[in-house]
Each structure stands twice: as structure tokens, then as C-alpha cells.
Image (cartoon, rainbow, N blue to C red; front, side, top):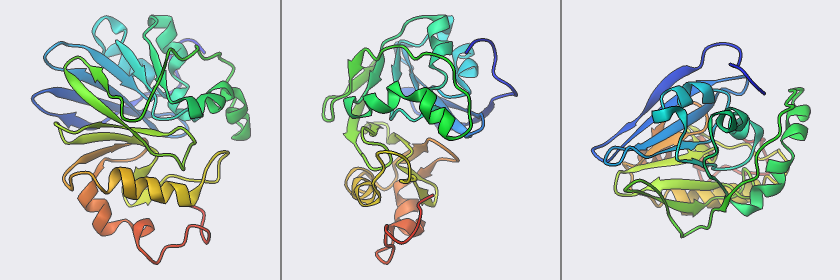
Length: 237
């Protein structure tokens, strides 16, 4: 992969506080959200889930290279922008080890969707460990283990700022699909109950696809979280 991807990545509403700024861009056949997290105090940045819109995020990054790459999981749409990052520099890549196999099979993932992906992905540098936070400058991101959509899916939670990057665990009025290799519907619902619904109700959830939402909104209105929903009776969104 080289050069600019087809089309124009679209900016999406992110999140701002006194301590950090999170900007987002959406694009590509999977309409994935790529995020740039910036510590206001130090200027350090992390690129979260570099997908199709990665070139736009890199243009907004000081010096064009983030200080780190953080992956919620290794589905193709969340890692396909990594070759653009490698062209710009070599920031360390953080990934949970349970998603290492998915990461190594990016080409096969693309082929399953009729999507040609011929690039090679760089080797991850660091293993994400639940309970061991990662830092972007002075901003602490707690790593919360939330499998079900993918075996090694994690959530990055900035508790002091009231925001979480939740990848494809939960969406506005929906939840992650579980019909891909390594998916487990019951496990996903348990992850949501344990790692998302226990957060402060006002926590802003920045999702891997679609608009952001809050814990409170999903507790009240997400049909997949109703007690009557049976994960074995429906393909999840």
C-alpha cells in the first residue's frame, strides 16, 4: 500500500478536555473511525486503530508521525493504515497478544470480504496487558480486556477525562458482530456488562464505526442489552 487512498476521509466529532484532544476521521469500504489522541500538556500523540483514513490523521499529527500506535483489535479495517504509518516513521505498535493471529492474517481477512490487501504489516512492538495502563504524555489510558468481537479486543479508558475508545465492542444502539473468526456472542455481552456498563454513565464512548455515544445512552436504549435478547438467536450488528 502506498500513496493516498481513494476518496476523501471525512472528519468526525471527537472529544476535547483540558488535558487531551481526540480527533477522528472516517473512511473506506468499512467506514472505520481512525483516532488521534493528543496530550495537550506535552504534545505527545497516539494513533488509535489506523484504518483507511490514516493519511488524514497523519497530516494532523505534529511532524507527521505519532509517538505510538494503539490497537483495540486486529481486524483489517483497524490496521490497514499501518503501512502509511511505516512510510512516515516507526512509532511503537501496541497490540494484545490474543489478536496476534488475526494481525498476521490481514491479507486473508481482506480476501474473505473480496478486498485485496497486499501490504505487509510491521511487527507489533509491545503487548497490551489488561490492568497495565499506557500513557500518551500525561494522559493515562487504562487497558480493559473486552473479548467477544475479537479474541484480544481491548478498550482504552481515560477515566479522569470521562472518555473511552471502545473499538467494535459497542456502538450507538448496537454491538459488535460475532460471526467472524474468534467471535463469541455470549463473551461479547459479558465484556460489555463488565467493561463498559460499569463505567461512569456520562463516559463518552468513541466507537470504531458510526457516531459516539455514552454509557447512559446505551444502558437506556441499546436493544442488544435488553434482558430478553438472546445472542444465539440473531446475528449481531
